Amino acid sequence: MNSFGRFFRVHIFGESHGESVGITIDNCPAGLPLKADDFLNDIERRKGGTQKGTTPRQESDLPIFKSGIFNDTTTGAPVTILFENNNTRSGDYQKQRAVPRPGHADFVAHQKYGGFEDYRGGGHFSGRLTVALVAAGVIAKKLLQLAPTSNNEALTEVKSAGISVIASILEIGGEKDLEKGLQKAIDAKDSIGGIVECRVNGLPAGLGEPFFDSAESLLSHAVFAIPAIRGIEFGTGFAAASMFGSDHNDAIADTSGTTITNHAGGIAGGITNGNELVFRIAVKPTSSTPKVQQTLNWETGAVEAFSVKGRHDLCIALRVPVVLEAITAIVLADLMLIEQKIPRIIHT
Image 1 (cartoon, rainbow, N blue to C red):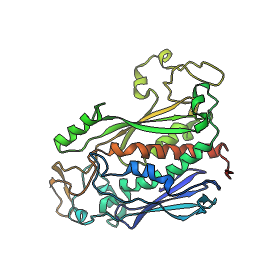
Image 2 (image 1 turned 120 degrees about the vertical axis):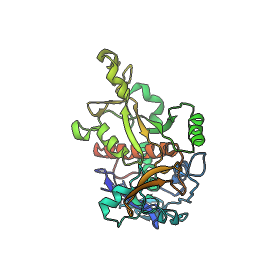
Image 3 (image 1 turned 60 degrees about the vertical axis):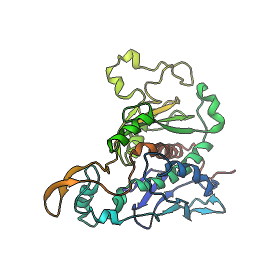
Image 4 (image 1 turned 30 degrees about the vertical axis):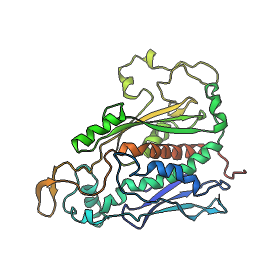
C-alpha cells in the first residue's frame, strides 16, 4: 500500500497536481533537533530545472511541518510534512487523457481505479512524490548520524560521523562519461536511463533477518517504490554468476569481520556483516518522451501515433541519487530501531 517500515514507519500521500504531497512518519524518536534548514540541501539536490536533462517544472519545496515537531524538536508524535504543488500545468494532461502513455502507469491506473484516478502528471504514481521520500530520508539520516557505528577496524575514519549513506550516478545510457550519455538522448530527442550506486559506511553487523526480512529484501522492497527502477544488485551482483566460489567468497581478515574483498556487498545470509554496504540500481528511461510512438486511444479503440507533451525529465537518473540515499536511510533507520541501536528518546 502506501506505508513502509515496522518501527520507523512512513506513510506517503498526495498527487503530482494535487494541492500537496507529503509524508507521515510514525515512531520517530523524541528529542531529535529538526528545522526546515535541515531539509534544504537534499531537497535542492532532488529538484528539476537546475541541471541539464531535468524537467523545467520547479517548486519551492519548502517543508511545512503539520505535526510531531515543537520548538524545533521532534515530540515523539507522528511527524507530518507537506510540500505544496504550485507550478502545475494540468491542461497538458487533459489533452492526452484518452491515450495512455506507453511505459507509464496511465493504463494500469485506469484499469485499477475505474477511471477515477487523478491522471494529471501521473497522479499518485508520479516522481513528484519522491520529494516526500527525501524528507523522510533527511530525518532517517539524522538518526543514523546518532547511532553507534561499526566496530570494523577498516571504518574507524567514519566512526565520529555516524553511518554515512552516499549515492552517485555511475552511467547514463551505458556511458561512464555522463555528459556523453546525456548528449545521446538530446541528439535523439528522446529520454535515456542510467545506473546509480549507493554506498553505506559505518553499519554495524547484525541488521536484518534470514529469508523474508533480509537486509537485501527490505532494501529492494523500498527501492522499487522509487518510480522508474528496473533492477537492483548487491556487491558483485549479476557478475557473480560467472565467478568461481573461491573467487567470489570474501575472506574474513580479523575478529571484527573485516573482509579482504567485498563481493557480497556488506550482507551475508541476509544480515549486515559490518563491511561497506554496496548496491546498484538500474533506472529506466523516462516514459514521457517527445519521440513519436504508437499507443491505444481507449475512446476510439484504435492504435494511433502519439507524442508526449508537457514538462518531463530527459533522464530521471540525474535526480535519483538523493532519493536512493533517502530510501536506504529509511530502511536502515528502521532496522537500527528494531535492534534498539537508536534510542527512543534522544538527549542532546
